[in-house]
Length: 347
Image (cartoon, rainbow, N blue to C red):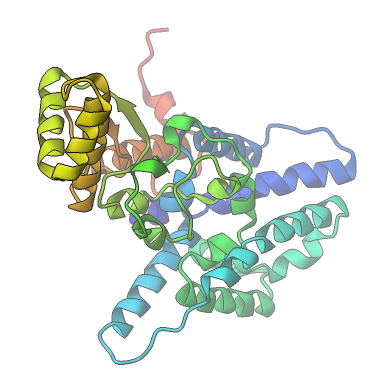
């Protein structure tokens, strides 16, 4: 977040300028052209399609500001007897629909040719003015709205992202490749756990098959919070060998009561039959879950890509930073064209 805040603080504004450009051209009945804003938007949408909303989780300067404010204020309050104020989660779920209305309103304003008259009151325009060092043309009302957004960021984690971000509304409607969607196997979850949901800064359950999964910002906190290693990007089953089956059967025999074992033997021809093994393994899994031992973390039975490792995060960050550099939205770095001009090509 620090790296992108320093090197590409205007990435959010550049991408959304591309969205506004499309609506403006529609209103003016003009053809679309590959402007710099359109190229940035296309690159960011393509990256989101492949890697999910990694931009929102790590690269958005406004999102980073909200994370830092929330962490600092709540870190200070945790050292005092003061009670933390917050916006209730049911209210946040309703308010999360506001960003779609904001995006639609801006689109209509661009189509009607009225956006230039109201853009000076935009809180993200005020923020962009601070990061660029130029406050020309920004109305005082924009700074008031920016202050209100900062208050919301303190009261609720990722307030702006969830409630007001028009670019977030665009990203939430984007499809994401299955290999980049955090998900869980609900049948393996411990009862009344909910730690993945509690850790999520946008209040989601990691279920890729739900309509709300578009709100996921790919931060990976649900992965880190799950005590059973049940939230992953990729979880492929690997058939267990005979030794693993024997171990599971031994645990089942130790866990099952004498009455249950007698019932199983009476229901089958012999204790070693496949039916007995299946029920015994089920008892073993229940016993392991009851003790809190991670079932899906066993490398002998599962190949996992959890998705929150430092290495994978850095790979995504490097890919996005390279993309930003190629489309010319990095600060303090030479442009892509300048570097290409200095390379001694053999042709």
